[in-house]
Amino acid sequence: MKFLRNLVLLLLAFSVAGCGYNAIQRQDEAVKAAWSEVLNQYQRRSDLVPNLVNTVKGYAQHEEKVFTEVTNARAKVGSVQVTPELANDPAALAKFQAAQGELGNALSRLMVVSENYPNLKADGLFQNLQAQLEGTENRITVARNRYVSSVQDYNSMIRTFPNNLTAKMFGYQVKPNFSVENEKAISTAPTVDFGNSAPAPAASAH
Image 1: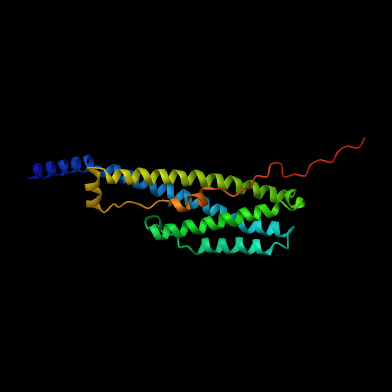
Image 2 (image 1 turned 90 degrees about the horizontal axis):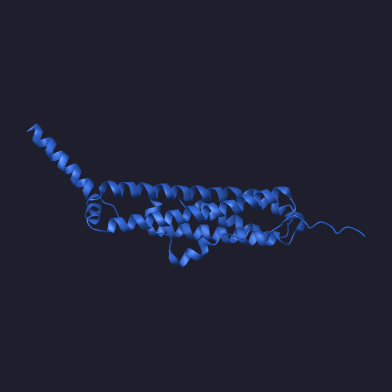
C-alpha cells in the first residue's frame, strides 16, 4: 500500500508539472515582481513632487494654478488604495492608471512653467530635482514595459492548452493590463529635459 501511495503521488506530481502548473506559478511570480517595481518607481516620482513644487514656488509664486494641479494630482494618486489585488481588478487598475497619468500631465505643465524663469533653471537644487525626475520617468517607462510584457506572457500561457485546464482548476485568471486608450498618457514621460538649463555665458567684451 505504501508503495502504491508513493507511486500515485509521484504520478500526480509528474501530471501537475506536465500540465504547466509550475510554469504558471513562475510566471505569476514574475508578474508580481514586475508590478512591485512599477509601484516602486511611481512612488519614487510621487516622493519628488513636494520638493519640486516648493523649489519652483520660490521663483514662480504667481503660478498657483499649476501648483494646485500638481498637488491635487498627487493627492489623487495617494487616494488610490494599493493592495495586492489592485493589479487583478480591471476597474481598480484603470483608476490607478488615470491617477498616474494625471500626475504625469500636471508635472509636464509644471516643468513647462519653469522654462519661463531663468533664475529657477539655474538653481542647483532645481537642476538636481529635474535630473531625478527625468531619471525616474525613464525608470517608470522601463518598469511599466516589463510589466506589460510579463502580463502578456502570463495571459498567453494560461490561455493555451493544456495550461488553460490547469489554470481553471487552480483558479488562475487572465490579468488586466494597461489599457490602450490610456497608453498614450501613461507612456509619454513629462518633458523635463530643456537641454542646457544653465544660463548662457555672457559674451566677452572686445
